[in-house]
Image (cartoon, rainbow, N blue to C red; front, side, top):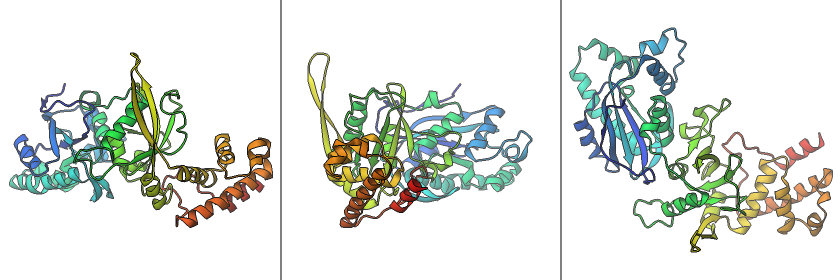
Amino acid sequence: MVDCVNVLANNPNDDVEQHVILDWLRACTSDDMNKVLKQFTSLRLHFESPVYAIEEQVRRKVVSQLYDMADDGNGGQIEADIRGSKDFAIYLLNDTKPEYGYRTTESGLRIVNTNMFDMKEFIVRSIQMRKLEHESGDDEKDSQKESFGHHGLLHASYNIQETKNVLRTLNLYEALYRQRRFNSLIDIFDTLNAAGSESTSVSASPPFYYLIMRNFELLPDQVEVDEHLDVDMLVSDYYTAKRLLDAETAVHHNIMHTQTVDFGGWRILNYVEIEGIKILFDVRHIGDNYYDERFQRTMLATRQRRHYEIVGLDGSTSNHHFYIPEHTAWIFSLVYHAVVHKVQMSETYKHHFSTHGLLGWEWKNFPELWTGNREVEARRMLWQKLQSYMHQHNYRFTRANDLTVGYFLITDILDIWYD
């Protein structure tokens, strides 16, 4: 049972970023927190539980997962760590204007929500350290300070994925996290449009840009929304996209959470819940080297609207849109994806390349040419055109940060095909 004070009721679809703070020694009172928040005006207190307790089994799980400690059940670090062994405080905050930048954290230099990081540092310096120093002579607290330092007395989430992970570890996710609800891809696009560069809100700074990179021809209403759907996005900012989509990092037994962008890693695959179904979104973003950064910025700067019309049950119509690349940027980004990222070329890509003038008429009219050495010839022709395009625009060939993305130059492809 959560002993709480619900300070502010929010609509799950409010455009705020949700964060959590765990005060292990309850050194920061409600009054202290309210004073701190006056210094950080974008943060709003949503919920607080000034006295919260967990069972030992849950405590071991929390310490193990939040602080990367192995729990072998035989004592060790977790046994000696008293975080969670006594009552602690929980605060949930809404960041109404989240900002991200590099900070040196306990796990090293990484991109974090700077409002949350700076607030935690402020609390540690001006509240917790002061109170703990006044309580010198308390052997248990002195021992605890030595074991994990002042920063370890307070745990703060630095992005929404961390918020979700903390609340799930405490078995509080369902009770406290306010999940965004999307009924369709139309809802997704409308949300991105409203919060992006089209927004008139003063908080929409810098502007957020997105586009659907490929396979958008049947979107949004002529594709089946199921677990096989995969949406490839390019966005100006990963964390803004993550907040707007309320996306959940996709991890499995081969991918650790520390390998994801959210924790300073490289993996960008996320789940977005639509109609109660988890849909995979590749959230490519400026600076991730999926394409050269200048190419990425040009794609977003020259993006175009793809319009569609929705007919309601009463026969009324409404106009909507989402963003796609400008035609030339689209076709050459597709060539890049097909010949640099991939070894095998899909039938869809072969069709695009032969119908959009990149290859001669015979490749369109005689699909049987796409076999053996002739396919290698086609790849070589596409490679040459891509090289010319990249050179003309001063774009570089880059190896994606995402380790699941291939990086095959033409000599690599020839070696593979002729081995």
